[in-house]
Image (tube, rainbow, N blue to C red; front, side, top):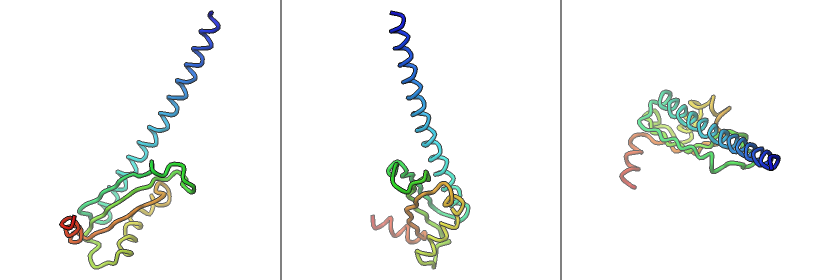
Length: 127
């Protein structure tokens, strides 16, 4: 009887360790993404004098995709007066330049929309 309890408790302990490890990995991924999102937002505000920044981590939508080397996927909206008079390609390059360090390490993909404050206001009225 004692040996059956020992086997069962060993299995329970093993399962508990596995669940703890899996949850710790998920928790680490969530915290890493939250820190990365906050860092992106901070960096964009500092570098581009933004009036509005929206950062959404979409990494969970891309888990396991080929080519995903562990970086995060973000959807970003940036509104800055620095974009005035510049074509969209130049605006996007400005964002990529501001995030150059993260683009090399923590960003795998970036879905980007850029606006001047006037364009953003016009967009709000159209919605």
